[in-house]
Length: 126
Image (cartoon, rainbow, N blue to C red; front, side, top):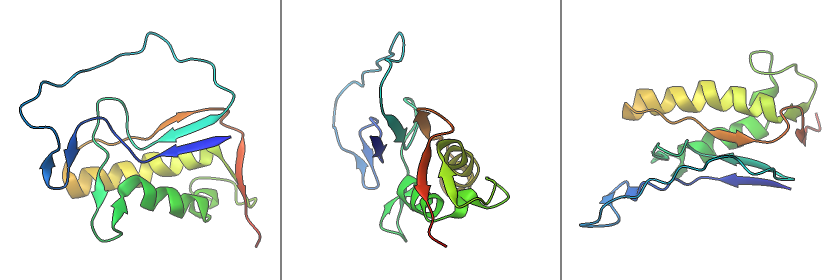
């Protein structure tokens, strides 16, 4: 099972804070549980998941879809074998999405990835 989450827990939206007059909470896990599935989320625990106004969804979703449709398997990020692994997706998101968040919003956003880096997520039919 693979789970993709274009979310963050900041309480922020493109229109401002969703929660007025509230103190935030910061939860830190002592260890990551062993899970039998793959998880890819839009941002680290202390980051905001940015919104792509032109694409009309999250910056993570835009770049994740590009990665899944083959961009993560090209020579810059992968090995061009038509099999997109978790590590290729992570490499693509680290470079492209993180750069876009810095350039467009002046903030850090780096995807969180949990799972076997060599797990094949997509096999392309080319």
